[in-house]
Length: 569
Image 1 (tube, rainbow, N blue to C red):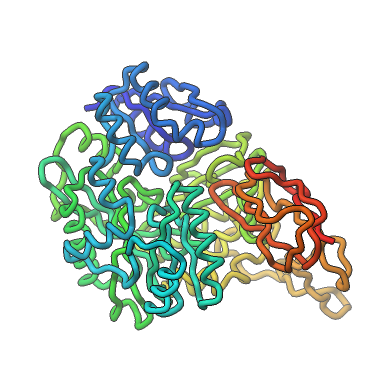
Image 2 (image 1 turned 180 degrees about the vertical axis):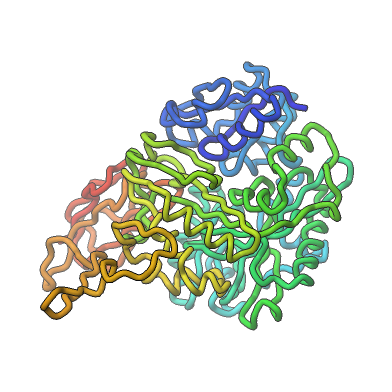
């Protein structure tokens, strides 16, 4: 077994890995940026080493610096977590060259799945069904638009090196294609240093179901059942559960077998996930499933698989990396009950889920619930990294019991000091359609108004009897009901006859690009500035037509929330 492990990551996954290592008697080495000097994972590791300033490109993405720390500290192995260098074949190869074990697949397996077009071609050869689309080398706009026309709108533009919901744009009509293509290419360049894209048929009523698989160096490959990750916004997962609600047993078996075939086709080793899209336009029973991509790493949502199988997937990763065979055969893998995970983010659902930063003045989770957290009460949420605060994982004998446990856990969770999506999660857990299993990836978009309605200031206990004191209809004694006020529609300082003339930063972040110059004439909704924060890229557009008479934003500059970036007259 490994004696000392360096964790090349941060936040909740670093804390998660440390927990398993402590149980197994493995010493841990954390690496951290200047922004994370006082972070929870730094405090919990056996030792911690500074590797650079806050931007990930100067710290967590510095493979050479991380490997040097591993050498200096005598670490036997490096666990990359997820994100950052976890699917970087060159990093895996550099670890091997330095005589350090990489907790993950071989560089060759990572490369085989890294580019979505090549991966789909390989899956077709292995007999795994793939989504219809264009996966060619030609990347000029004319070729890509012609491909989109042939496939038929709506289509999905995807960065070939993308992942985690980044580098994806839905295009509903041809006139929108050029702008969305440029946007997707820009995000691919920024996030993955690769502008190339592919075009796929957009499945209009899809469910996102993925298979957790494991393989060792002795020729064994198995799956640990499926997870349903269909509740998403902007292609980012919000709620995950296992097993998938309503999935026919025949489809479960077929998807599991396809995932194992995929792993064997590339000589896979360690933990991986095959992501499928399931067309449920005719119901789950009559649906077809298609390969989307393979994540050659552990997934954020792995705890729900741990909950239904009773296994520690990080321990399995470490044992496979050390050369041990898989502990179980396919027939021995347990499947008990139902598990659900909810991601608690520092973001504002009432204002298009913009990220929120600040200090967590209060953070409390109920006892008896698994909370995988990146922070504790009193910690700061930084602008530089992912805005996830914690993951809450619950388990029950069936889906109904798990949903009750999730609702109870969320109602008794407290997160204050920054804006969070806690009320949004509570509304999802209480939503009758979600509880009935009527889900697909468009669920949140269809019900966004009711799901983002402000949660009451009071916190109701579960199953409290109806009370007139909780009536929000505007009841008044001896008077007609008052008109309810929707606070989301209260806006700042402007007469209806005037248009806004200033472009304001809606969040703190990095100015990625500026698309206009002072003195230029701009049209309403013309893209002006691209702002990036917490792994989200936002294009700020001209609020009105006019002359750009003042622009204070410069590419590469960090700006604060509500900063004046441009003025139009």
